[in-house]
Image 1: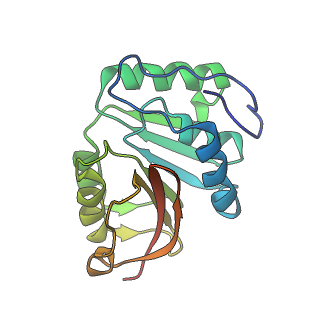
Image 2: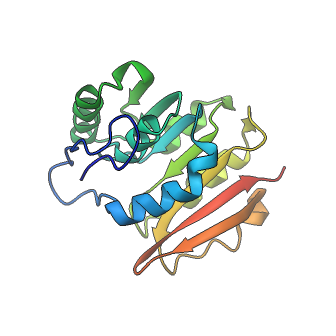
Image 3: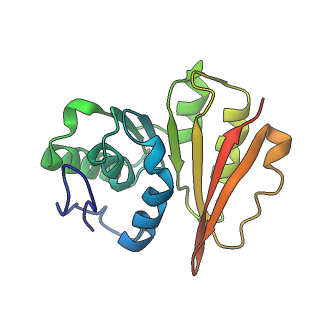
Length: 183
């Protein structure tokens, strides 16, 4: 696993030991950032269920102003901190060892331009996070939310939560769903 582009291009990143996380492949990460590129420069990035932190670090490498990494596993937190130190992005990042749903519940306003969430597949946690986000004020009208999930995961009900699907990028076994808040 490596940083694909930007100031930390080609730098290798550590992964979280064990099988509890599944890093996004370089090919899928590149496709994701091809879609996100207009939004990344000077963005405040929120990486939920962050694992190794590779998605937020990719955003920082491509010009994001800051990133918040949220994961409740100590091994993930240690891995993220190591990767931030190695890529020299520690000063642009905050690492929170907290359950994502609890973290979101404590936020009065969501002050991020980009939110990426990659909960364990079939856990329902992406949808739970969207339910919490639906009741929050957003600092930026154009905040983009990206959910990584299984290819056949159903997001057709997100309009009931006040989100619209802007784009969906489907891969062999998973997909990215790009959302914006409508209300």
